[in-house]
Length: 339
Image (tube, rainbow, N blue to C red; front, side, top):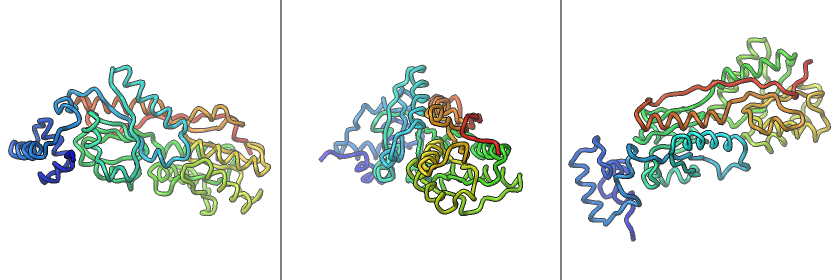
């Protein structure tokens, strides 16, 4: 049976990352530790998948986009597509090899981020879809390999985060509804405790409190950022609260706004004549729905581009790890009626 890097790490009493760094002659590994690891590797007849020297991030021209939770998602939507387009555009412009890997919570327990990079000759990665309960969320903090997360702040000297000011953006979106006369607003929320859900909820509450409005608990509709869940939950909400309830639905994503509009239409209502609906993200399809959806445009493609740019600069030592906050814009279309 062929020995793996985990076998070597276990036998040498060190981490997989330490084995990788010893094989690549990193200066922060002592000569004694390196010698022991190389001796163990030789005794176990361990051979890395690729030539060790080529694995050093100092020489590699390969980066990756890592999607977490992709297999669990019901559908692949414009957000991921636009994000990857931005990453790939930067890679092409700078003559970088770029690949995509799909992980989930289970695979994160089986293979560390550093091991994934080592086995595939990756200098670093842009990681999207990471939850604060995922194994990588904690282990990345100690990683020696550069990475850039999207919309989730992990921490660590080699981890950057590219995001928007979701609090300010959702405040602006909520204020727009209020300025159009809407005082009874239902919130179609994303996954409970997700970082962006918490931030967008804070933005909504800031605007409502500033205008002397309240958001009753029964007017918060929780979903997992899935269109079909928005469809079914909003339909249920309408049956329970009827026409005497809210006048607008404030949605935490464009896909939730699309699901909300579908539920309203199935229930015999018109948008925006009977109910107004707003979304968040700025995905392409919102320009072609009926009606076209008012939304916050995160400039997702730019987010992917800037994430890859920041990763490249970290690898080259041009910029340190940092939180990069990108601008957003409010896009007013046809899904809101002034009341």
